[in-house]
Length: 303
Figure (tube, helix red, strand yellow):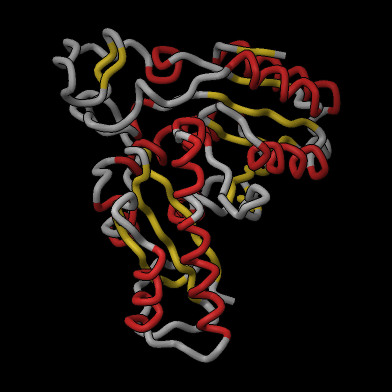
């Protein structure tokens, strides 16, 4: 079932709860920006196994894109997404517009390329309430080059939690910084939802599945394998006893070439994002780079 309005999704949720008097009904939510792939489907399958009802949101959230980022180029495949969800047994697909999610914020539209905006909606925090995560969690990794990104992520996820009121929400480990921040937000704001982390899904060559992979050329997809090669090599070196961060980082150089625009390679605590001085069993290694001007991320637990 496709639902596009907040009023309609709330009616459906109320109907479900009335049917069971709210007793024992477990609702699962998978927040997505669409262009669904096997990684998303693994989250959906987990929800269907765990919950009585499963809701998938499909919303390309403008507030998490900066003015020079790929909002307009982000793949939008709603028809295919609907088909995939229906085939797997999703109960409701919630696909709102930006105006449905954020309202007609009263302000002039920003000039092209300036600020966050879609049509006549001004999505600046001059006019819109944002959920802002702790500075310690965003002053690193993806947020170094994506100012305001996690403000937009936390805002839209909080709105989805308020609208749908799920018992469980399912997120992939590939977006590790996002996952850790959302867990922190839920804890700090006392949001009654359990966050379920699901493993990264990779293709047969080791490339982490991502909606942005659709924007890669065939040669770019081959070049993109460098992310997992670097990570798996670091993991192998750690298992052989190398714990010095500098030494582990330097192993990446042999995999990189002129087609790889490395943004970061970082070693942090898997629960707190605190930077590691020496690798240990609680370390997660995260990488971001651009290929074909497409920004890709990946990570792995070192043990």
